[in-house]
Length: 288
Image 1 (cartoon, rainbow, N blue to C red):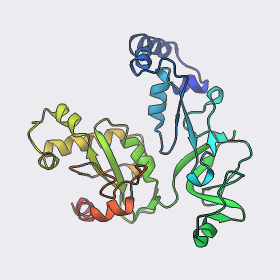
Image 2 (image 1 turned 135 degrees about the vertical axis):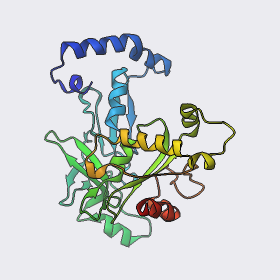
Image 3 (image 1 turned 90 degrees about the vertical axis):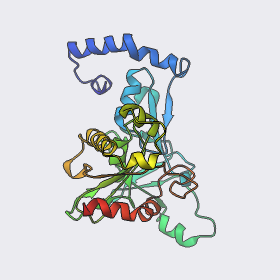
């Protein structure tokens, strides 16, 4: 699908496989999801893995990704239906200036940018420098001006071996699995990254034929469950660089929640809280 969308040559055999898959399965997904009259869908707020976008595109469900923080009212870039470039969040909207700082941070200027934080001059001064709002996101512009987001500036961590890892990139790969509800990748100052995984227990139970009566705390401690989750993690991160791949996994018996303070109201992981709450679990992964 990527070759088709980018205009790259596609072999006859691959075209034939796609036509067959489309006729038998893919063309049925749009009406099955109630999207018969939808021209396209928009995505924002969180990273969308390219595999997800391409899978939906193959089923004639185009996804247009966009980007923008609340402080910018709140859209900065957006893909257009006729010039959609998968894997990016599009080009800046009219009257918006966008540049990438030396450290990779996305900075913007325009009439849509806030004047400042209410009664917080220090935060305002830190966020807006010489008229440019510093988003806190790391990104890059391609030759045609399309923006690609790589991570949050404050969330990128460095391992003890000197490798910089963008956790959201790794997490986006892991979230492709239907067996995971939440994943958190950590490893700042450590030799390699590890992951906390909150499984989709109904699907895991069904896949491993586990008893419906067993509580999730008991299931999380089972060797066969851990082996299955570990293999699933390895499969989903196989296409990442070696230093980004997850070596060890800790299974959480429950999902992360807003009520517990582990997720923000917009369902973003509060990493500091999660890492502090499960510090012993994380330390155990490295000790073993």
